[in-house]
Length: 512
Image 1 (tube, rainbow, N blue to C red):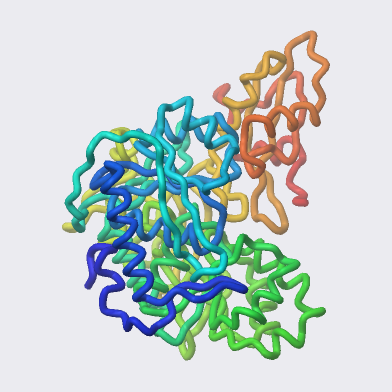
Image 2: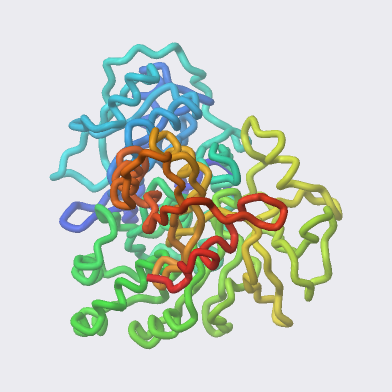
């Protein structure tokens, strides 16, 4: 098996199509290999090399896909959400110890100001819209210290992502070259991808789902991928017609938005050649799975993944094996077991407990976070196991179902939010005395975020003003959908504030 990204595509035919976009020429695998070599030369000439951390802030599209893939063959990549505000960019750039930031040639937004604050040099990316999709050049006026020009090996970190934790400070998840290659091969095996397959990439490419399931697995298979600017339900069916994919992967909220517009696009659906649809990053409601199958006449493959696993852990199988609505499928790459929630022991297959995983796609540990590593990893039966924080159980056929959440992280349609991070942002307002953020049910997103707030005695703030303040300091998806102003925040029997159950206490369980 390939263990580094630099060798992931080396055996694919030069004539094969690798990467495209609507109304753009296709980039072949020969072109992709040439691009990777050019990027290596450019970065090395700038002083960027092995082990250096390069943040990437680019819009969705083919250049974002190739910038990640090519840069990760030279240095350590750290894609960031372009929707972040300046303070958020500054936090991540500082936390990553980023040496450089790749941005579009014309970028002048908050990422630029954050880079200046943090002393991070800019690398500008330019491309010719008339040229092959994904091809680009890099240029920089910054001065960087000389980097290590050796190519990374299998154990070097290729990708760093932050994941929300139970504290306000997100955890750093380093993923090695071999982690990515292992996960890409797990996914292509689960989906039986071949060079004849074409993926319509709708997932954001700063997220593990899009980077690994859409991009890396496609490249590992020698297949084709078309990257669109970002998901838009109003444009999806035109893209389905123009790109002519054999599959796409999305989060449940995207699938639901697609279904809402399916009736008016029957002709396009009938002409589509979708071999399957894939869903991951949040639980897919069984009725939605069944409606997707009925609408598209193709199986829906639900998978279970997380950042620490370099995405995929379990996957429902392709036909003729069954896809079970409400189940996240069979172990699909790593070993998946059930463990005690309180002791470092593995339980019998039919037990209900915490889901744990072990395998070559699993991160070796959080960076600079001994407590998180002690809490989330343990050794048993000759393997190192990672605690997912999810509760589940296997059925008699080996299909895993999630039965509960052990952590307080809010999963808003696949976007993970640390409630304490939002607490901290709101408490920066001088009129807010106390705040506790928590999950509320949502009929489309699964979960959304709400906040209970106690104001200072003289404050005249209302709920909308609090939400507006949050929007000035946090990405849109982290802004509480509901704010309840209270005289006192409810506490449990021991006097502690309990996020879990807060929605019930405040009557916010009706969904929206």
